[in-house]
Image (cartoon, rainbow, N blue to C red; front, side, top):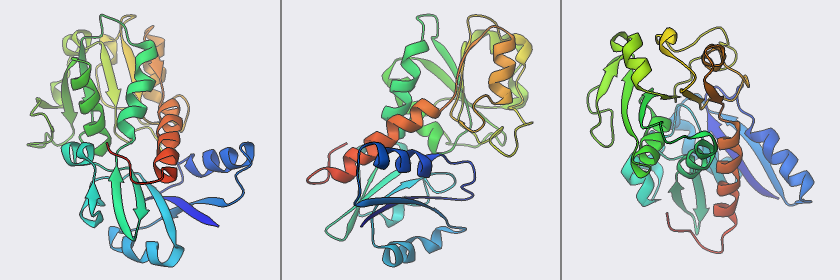
Length: 255
């Protein structure tokens, strides 16, 4: 039986195990199994590979950056954005990829309009780096928003501002707002990023990488103002299919 899975902590929010179980059933894939591995520390990483005889892993919060030192062959995208969410074992060596990039881009585009030219990225973690990469590719100007105003948090040296800097005018100016933080994720469904929601209007597009619950308070507040909204479930499905393609390629793919 081929073994795959997901590492992160906690994993109560994740739909990945269910996604792959359904995929294997629908496609009559009988020689593969996917499981959640909620490891409390990245120090458990090496032992997990040995104990489970894994062929591949997905990586989620909080290990997308912490996992990189364990990988012998990080892709060019992983090296650029310093975030890895997909690992393949090949000839007893680990190859690292970032499928969030293609997942986010393909998921974002259907609701993107020509007037979405300025964006705010809420959060500065590994997922934010993937979003940065895509916005750079699409020539959309952006700023990152951090609760701690971290220095050097941007992979492209973009401005990093604090939530306290976000007044209504700033929100009106930035018509694309992307939440990459876990704020509002199950079970903390009554939480939302601290932004000036009164500045949101019908020209806004609010995208939340969180997909559990399906409509976070962040998206609900945007919808009330007439904004277009989308959660991260589409992105999850796309990046999961990309992971499966990476794990099943005849040799490690280039990224």
